[in-house]
Image (tube, rainbow, N blue to C red):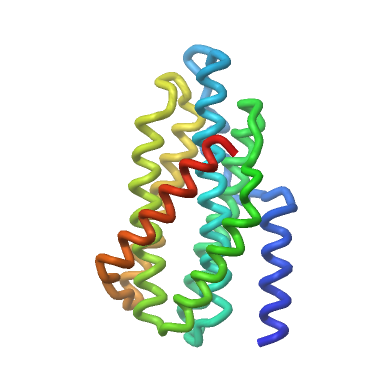
Length: 207
């Protein structure tokens, strides 16, 4: 367990400090803007993409925490595969934020630690709740991505292409978790997750 904890600690440092890379092509690489964004639109789009980047930081932490405490090798493999795709999401968001002249969130370390702790607790509760937590997380992320797709500047097709592909990936992660036996979480747990998400999004938009 100590060795696994050290490995997960190293993953956390890399997630927070290293530049993420994508194996797949960037979803926006062949997309051009119909018209250039003005300064207000750029600030708003960068803030939205900062939230999405922070969400992927949280996803990495959740999966790493869950993988640390779960006992089922099949579940660990599913979490590791999802984590790899979330790393690509990090790379996509990071690149787009830079293009928009923005920055990533100053609060990322705080959200990583809190999400890792939640993931470790979920993993210790057993597979059906661990996978149920994963599925519900991905459902809420999908809903959040829909909101951002509506909130983006109308002509920001590059950011939109990134979020559309992220939405597809998140839906696949949720479906995999349910297929592997994830249970439906109680309503109070879902509500608490939504509340935490609202705090994260509202603060990260500015910080």
